[in-house]
Image 1 (cartoon, each protein chain N blue to C red):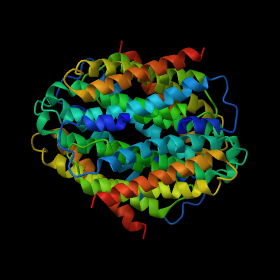
Image 2: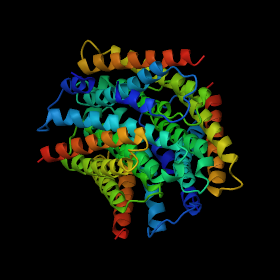
Image 3: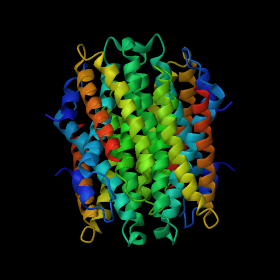
Length: 135
Length: 135
Length: 135
Length: 135
């Protein structure tokens, strides 16, 4: 059991109808994606071809911010609000899709973009699966 | 001219069709709302009636995170993506609405909730006006 | 009275011996500096000479993160911890100094770096004055 | 190899003399601690004894913010600044120590505080070991 799962297990009140497996997977995907995006933006900055990577860096920065915020919102259950959760997940999935597409464009030249694109795609998928499970 | 406006003036590339006045107002409203929400959550924690304010604190924390992230996304113009901007603004407006409504419920007893509710309402309005201007 | 000052006025418990004026000035300087740094990083990304601005962008990103976190820590008074406050202010002042110096190197060519350097210097000063007042 | 390690492997420039193992361990400890602290603050909010946990919640919120920012700063290597890294790690270690001590006070009654205290202690240790390795 991961630490995210352990923390969820100890929540002292009712979690409502949310799918625990999908919730845990989404929090962990957001956290991993945020770190990849922060590191990818910095790696892009150190490439000689940085002037061709400025859109990628911007997408990385947006995606890192959205993923961090989404992981935080999803880690809170007190006063749960399904509409807000869905809206935040929508924005996060869109940021992951945009960043994943942009990183994929550079994946054959830059390994950091390849790994980051995969993290974005995993996170987009985890967000969408959690949205679908919210009913 | 505010510092946010000054920084926008110095952006070296084309800003696209975005409404500058509404953009500046929204960035500043997000920043102010984030600070109010962080302070309101902490003030609620110090109230003797904290057990009646737990939903308010949770809304404050979500709203602070969303507003901080939205201010950041809106402060970036390189590789502008109108769909992502709209989606982030939607999530932020919803967080502001939820937090503003919750704080308003306690506004007659707690001045921090009254001031925070006003900041949330201003930020929600600024987000929605910017969304409308995106076309 | 600014909104930050208004929120501080409504805090329902004892604030301790902290200098209110210096506290408010520091929170506001952190918030303004964070926005400038996020915008300056993005403006640097859109300069044709971006490959000469990569250290500046990195300093901007660090400084924005430190300033955002410092504004949050300073907006909380419940369970106040002077040692932690001092340590966070030290790190923030150092990030502002590093970013202010780096931006100053480009201030004659880029107005965003000039305005951002000024925001960093103001924030560094506000942090150091608050540290001195903590005794 | 973890994703954090994979991203570090792909950094295209010189990393300098930093200890890679300790760096990776510290980034991962910060990320895990931030999530635990956000979840612990929310779990405390849902305890019937919330009025006895307000200092714990405040420590959780500070620690989450410091850990998130530290993970970001440590994920950037372009224009590396050892003095800033040390200062940020000092602040993070202090936040982890304060939060770990506070959570430990409630560990026998609340499992979320017990797990969070462990995450804080691991993160404090990882920060101090990285500081020591910076020379």
